[in-house]
Length: 343
Ligand SMILES: Nc1ncnc2c1ncn2[C@@H]1O[C@H](COP(=O)(O)OP(=O)(O)OP(=O)(O)O)[C@@H](O)[C@H]1O
Ligand SMILES: [Mg+2]
Image (tube, rainbow, N blue to C red):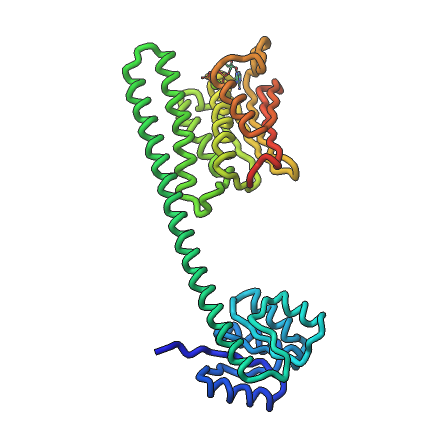
């Protein structure tokens, strides 16, 4: 059995409304109601959810048919056909904004109305089917992306496990430490893919949350050195895409690891402070500690050690600027211009 389409009639002229209702029923449509004001039209549209609204423009009450159509279309997608005696340009332009299925000028032929109604139903059904197909393919794409995040995470886990097993065979303490630090760097990546695979929004990540988990990871790794060290993460809510979140996360990891490794000792505790500010033109990350500070002869630009070189490479990758200074400890500021962020 074919579907019986439900129509709401909005018409302030009672005789016209009755005739219209009779005609629609004789054509096999169900008339859910006849209302004479824009306010009632909005209320009934939400309550009865018709398949189509036939809308007069000049109505009782404060709202015109165009106002009512705008309010309805803001919330639900119901096709609307205007039936009006008004055909001036201004009214027509206003009506156009509400994307009507048709605009019929009274008096019109019955066949014109019938044709417009059938076309509106047909278009609406086709649009619903298309939307359904698009939604299905988006759901499929999301599943695929989640799968990819998961599989990258699992492969990274494999790499960190291999590095961990390998480090067990290394007798030299310094080399073993280097292996374990690299294992920890892989874990930073693992963590970010884990967060992305669990996040509702597959494209962007709440970075402050990731930053805190990342600092926890470093504190766990440098457990023996972090007893008398605290940390604070102050950050506005900021969503970053994977291309920015990964380099910035790795930079933060190198800097926090440095603070834990070099700034403090058994006799000297302190604090590491991470701050993320989202200004109009830049995203700024400050990492500070109140430890011993960089050695007096240290030159950041010329340093050849791995950690700071990873930082320099990643800073270039995200088109950021870096400032490293001794300021009652070490203070590193990373400034990323908003125009190079895709978020
Ligand atoms: N927060 C800090 N406090 C004191 N000294 C620091 C700090 N950060 C870095 N340094 C000094 O700068 C040097 C270079 O740091 P860098 O991270 O490049 O190398 P690393 O930490 O020694 O080893 P790795 O290459 O494994 O990171 C360190 O060896 C240390 O002397
Ligand atoms: Mg380092």
